Every structure is written in C-alpha cells, then in structure tokens.
Image (cartoon, rainbow, N blue to C red; front, side, top):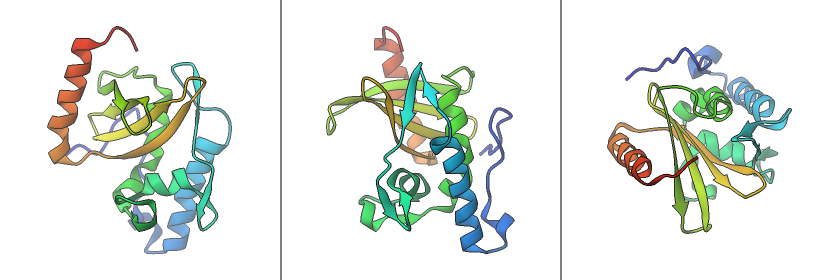
Length: 167
C-alpha cells in the first residue's frame, strides 16, 4: 500500500511523539483546530462546517469522530491510523477533486435524507465524507479505507459516473 502522495502533507505518526499520548493528542488536535476551526474551508464553493458540540475532553464531536472508530459515539476507540492521517482531510476537501488520484461521488444517505459527497484519494486510500446541507457542507467523517472496502468504493464511484449529470 502506498502511504505517500505528493499533494498531501506528512502524516503525524505516533512514533514521532515517543509514546507521549498527551503530546500526540495535542498535536493532532492542533492540526484539527488549524484546518477546521481557524479560517474558512470550502468545497464546491460552499463553506465546510463541523459538529461543534463538545463531546470528550472539551474537544468537538467531529474531532473525535475523525480520530476514532466504532459504531456508537460513546463506544469509539482511538485509531492511530486515523490520527496519523488527519492532516490529509483538509487538502482533500479544498482540492475540489483536482487530482487524477481523487475520486468524488455523491450518494444519498437515507438516515439524514441528504446527499453525501465521498472524496477518496486512491493513492493513500483516505476518504473524507461531507454532507450537503444546502447552504454549507457538514464534515461527517474521514478515515483510512481498508483494503476489503476498495472494490465496494470503486463500484460506487463507477456507478455514480454512469448516472451523474454534474457535481
């Protein structure tokens, strides 16, 4: 698996912090603040917002969702791969898909009755999901695509390409 793309910044690896969990968590939160709380981030000409609700340790629900995995918010566990890849989320969003290795498609989400945009860098297998809220986009999550999911996402992308009118 390729873990480097010239259009993306370096990952923040756990080993860089010599096992100091507080320093590591602070470093990745600083990236999150810089990328999602400071300034304006846009996708397709609309602002991108996060879920600002303070959830755990005084940090936003969106932050915890991006760096952890699990089915329920209260049962999620820190995922070091997701933590390390957090610096990739903003560049994928702000690129608007202007890279031959990025795949973008729209898929209806039945639970929220809204379209979700899937932004996938196939070089590093990293995905960002944004929900279209008409006036802005909401950051839903971002994660490393596991090898067993690649074919499924490729099918979604191809299927969308066969039916799309325009993004």
